[in-house]
Length: 507
Image (tube, rainbow, N blue to C red; front, side, top):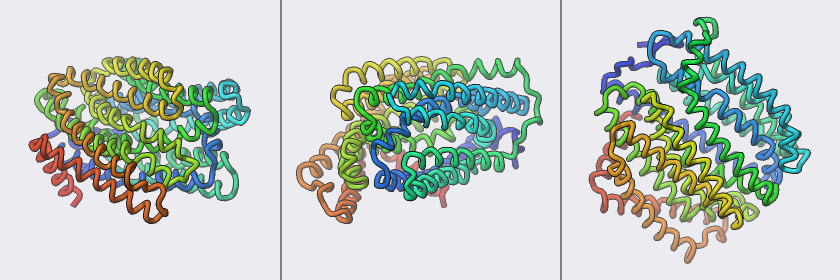
């Protein structure tokens, strides 16, 4: 079946088990492939810009875009999820309603960001930060234009957003930023690249989304219905981005712009494993959970399988960060970025919490009970502030540990909530997390001791250091799998079977 531009997803709403499973495997394979491309681009951008720009210049951009980044992530994503989850025959009306609501919000929030730019400069005691905040205020409006085309593509399992839009946007950002940095434009290379990537995003989404406003009838009543569903998601997204605002403000006020740059790069690197989980799995989980939520047995089994797979992958990646995070960053970015390496290693818990939340939050959203996300929102905000206040005296290492702790608490809360929604006993869910945790701890102990007591890869010549680190990363994986097979043979067999199915889908 060829879906219309805003028609029902394929497979259909009833979703036969085999058809939906094949679609999910196909989607995950596509997401994995495009994610690999995106990560190569992002990693190359980080490494090259770290050699071209100073930590202080990176810090200026991070501070100057803290408000627009916050607004972009919270302005319309809740309505997008409501559109993806929407059941019934009024999808065209819902799409038009979401478009006009998002556009209006984008205009208002861009104006608000421009008006608040001087306050951002005062917060960080920097005129340059205030100027960057003012100039970048327009990206909120550009993002609002992508909401409906992107949501409709995701709703109907149209993976061209993953295959085309995301890579083109990433390559544009990296290419413009690196080119202008080489030309000596400093922090402004990042500002211009930001606008260029959003412009490309708008053009690509509208070109591929095959949707235009005017095909449906927007209504205030429908907006209110969608808003009731999306409000908890907006609150949750606001809390998520507010955490980053709080972290940046704490670091900028208590430390300096260089520390903000170190924090920014450490956080970006630490986000890569968590982003991998979201990009590869969660993108297909929301529409899938929305279709099977009416079948309690399938819903429960699907949640447990997805959580086990995502948690295991997250645990292996976290083990790599803890054991090898600092030498990895120093080898790739240079000695001036050692503090970012410490923060990177300390933020290993970020990906673990992200993995738990990626599956659990999508299950809650798919069930239509999004109001329960308020629990994770509250835990996220409170734990971030408390842990930052307690650990900031320890510098960027303390900031990294605070971020890890807050994300883990948030993820565990999400698991408890999702267990309630799916009818899965919490004890059973949490017990299933233990084997991968044990395997990760053993891998960290073995490889971490080897690296920090014997090898010291960051002191080796660059080619040899890179080869050594690759070998140590493979060793982490080997030790992890060996221990996991020993303590949880059934889980290991299920995961191997899943990998084979995905490999078959890729073929």
